[in-house]
Image (cartoon, rainbow, N blue to C red; front, side, top):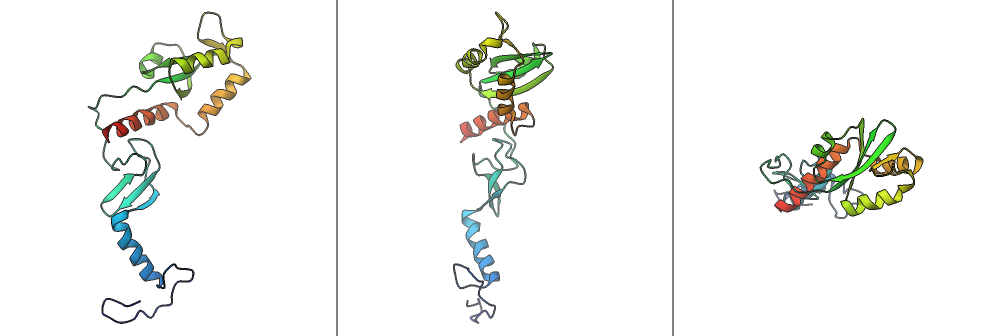
Length: 182
């Protein structure tokens, strides 16, 4: 490698490097290229717009690799919140309700429940499929079901890897906002 002053670099070439450069010059070349094309890496914290954990780092800052929201920017609260239909699963005593809403906070505020178990993206059609799927355990004329293994397994599958169902719902809403803003 020829240094900027015209002298040859005396360092050993990095083994298995794609170019005949020393480690220092490989890193310098990497920094020079990523200045324009960025470097994909884990974000310092999940994207506030869509929840993705992967971003692209530029010298000027980070952007989300999924929705391209600039990390650090706060989603505009004045944007109309998009409709994100969900099927919700709540537990009250020894029963589980399967319902649907585009505004689960308001809906669940009106229902007795001990715990929000999970959310599933979808609307009435999905809710009706779930009601049919677990019909053998449904309390007649209601959307409430007796607790049973198949329903608990389904809820566990939905909740796998989700620490807080409300955070998951908010991620879906913010992702819809980010995609709409683009």
